[in-house]
Length: 136
Image (cartoon, rainbow, N blue to C red):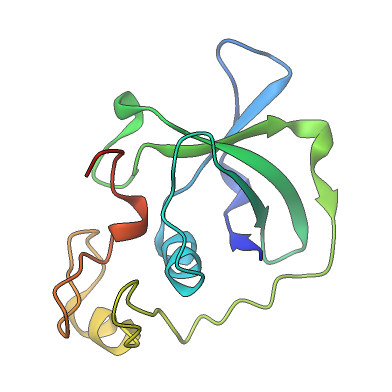
């Protein structure tokens, strides 16, 4: 299982110069997590991939100080040298399944916009469910 992530957002760890952090935010990552029914947990290891085929296994972390309207606070940490080239990710941009009821939310999100605050119109589950902070 590969989870979509945007590798353009890499930043060097402030504590460990060998380590990079990748923000896990945005609707591509959110749709991929929902598709695979993965809710992020601190310490979890996930295989991440971008559309060009860059892949890495990252350890998931959460920092409440990173949270903002456009950032979930979740990130993956790994060594830059661990990034590998693989096959391009075949990401289905036409589908965004609800985490719980599995209805396609894309038509709804296209209509109401993407503000990171929407809920499924079928079951009420927050669209951000896979990226909710720990303990939520």
